[in-house]
Length: 290
Ligand SMILES: C[S@@+](CC[C@H](N)C(=O)[O-])C[C@H]1O[C@@H](n2cnc3c(N)ncnc32)[C@H](O)[C@@H]1O
Image 1 (cartoon, rainbow, N blue to C red):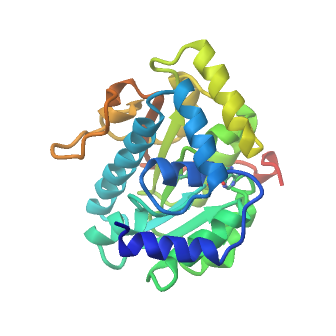
Image 2 (image 1 turned 180 degrees about the horizontal axis):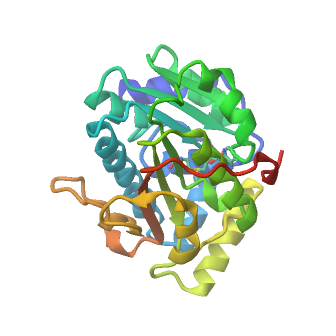
């Protein structure tokens, strides 16, 4: 029997028409047990399973990390969050986690995909302290001046910048460095950076290639980065303990829901939380693609 949130989800989808291609945000939602996905998203998710049999655990593991990281920061007094490449804030959302610690916490969600943004807006209608902005995270100047961001967040105070499973879509390392530096330079001391990235833990070269072949149906092929390459994202930040490592090992908590049949330690992703403990040396914005 369906729940009332299933019904809400179906109503939301009914009002939005049909997307032309699948999206990773809705694949994530499907594999997390959400209700905001279409047939073409479910087909893509099912086609990923033979290639990466632990794909559902993969997503559950990074969302469990997201909850732990947001709670970690909120408990240390951070009450502003800029979530880049938000996808669908359905299961394990940032605002729910942050506002359970501090009901006044503010969250600016940003995603480049118009359909995802419309769906997220419908889901978040009436939620206090939250905005949704359609923008390309590779254009920090646009994101950082968007009304949904400037009207909600005060960058003279600490802000946690989140980029969960969105950086694999920036395929050029130079562009990635410029983009993350631009957000870092906009933040004040005491701010934070939270990221997860595709990174080989147990996947074979054949699985990496096969995953790219299937995922490419969203229009872009995500890239994998080694822990050392991913580490450069945190230049200028001090890593919170226990550092950058396999996602399930970042401050695991007792009592978290178990995640299916596969070992959470074997999912192919690394994560970390960086703390901005001193003022960064400004980086020229002209290095960043406009
Ligand atoms: C794999 S999903 C992850 C969503 C969410 N962060 C999560 O962990 O569930 C990646 C999201 O990043 C968004 N994205 C990819 N490239 C982007 C860009 N350049 N700017 C903004 N959003 C982007 C996609 O539209 C998608 O919603």
